[in-house]
Amino acid sequence: MSLDALPNEILCLLPLYIDNIETFTNAAASCRRLRDCLYTAHPNTILRLAAASAPTFFSPHPHFLVAATARQVSDWALGNEARTSDLRRALQGGIDSLYEFCLQHAGLTLEDIRRTHLARFSTINPLSDKIDKMAGRQWYATPGFWNGGVSEPYTVATEPDRATFQIITYGELFGRSMDAFLQPEKNLPYFDIRTRIDYFTYCLPDWVCSSYPGFIRLATGPYATHLERPGEGDQTAMHHILHCGRWRRMWAAAIRSVLGDDDAFTNEDEEEEHWRKRMLRNALQSQGLEGMQLVTLPVEKMDKEYVQKVRRMKQQIDQLNQPPPVEMLGKGTLTPVSFAPDPPNDVEIPCRNMWGPWTAFNPDAASDEDSEEESDSEWELNFEEIEQ
Image (cartoon, rainbow, N blue to C red):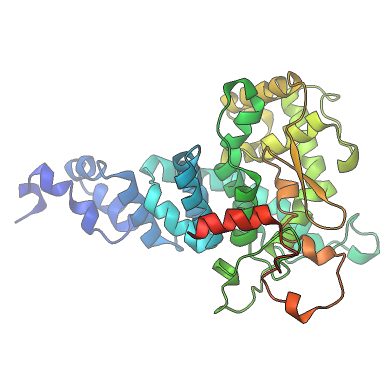
């Protein structure tokens, strides 16, 4: 019996038995009737077909598909305490755990896949190249690197493609949380600081990440006891990227171009930056894939609606009477981490222990678990609730 003899109801079930997205698209291209039937596939089915084709078509894996679906799981969890706990557990399991969580709670349409692949050439690859020039091999290849060739020489091990998707995923997960602070009168839900720090702690593995008084790094995900200590330095690399002068100047220039005023957004040192500028910078860096066109495309080629969104954000921040509250975290000189998405300071907390100050060596305190006296009770309470 040929496929033509089968009723549409049977043909519409075929995606459940196709092995991957390549077979799916080839079958859909074979005839109009089959295309019409296959295109009724549920978005979660298409996502799972895409997952079966990774990493061949969706690299780096699993970061590509996580970035493509993270906003959906964020929307699913935002404002729901139980679902937020589920999301935190997924984050604490590392990037592979978050990937499985996305496969369970999200989906993709063929149009989503096309749009994301087009963005690879217009946004993702150009951003990766810029990161490579400020923290990767191209940066290190600068003549006289350690002797004045670059303004901020530093030792980092950056994978530019991976770092690009890590920044994008942060925005896809937490971009909507910024709305709560741009429009405080609406009392919108937002993810708290701990959830954001969980993302950087476990989904950006780093060999320097360890517990210290006030911060507990659980033995989960990339830090599970049966695994070797992570060899990556992703938190340290991300910290350098988000704080370095090249990154900050790049964003300042992009913001000025959209606002159309050279004096609208001057670039100052972080310590001297007015809170409104800092909030606008953080808001725009937390918009996910859409937001990264700001630093990869000229204004005339950007999405017009997004250009208007940027200008609207500036107006909303100008109308605020005070900045979002902050929480002092870290060790030594504490870091003011904003309740609103704050990527440069969020990433500092899990890798803060590498900069000291350090106390005298204590064998009983050298494990990944802090002593009861050293630990911050709020962190412990949050993690205990999640583990129940």
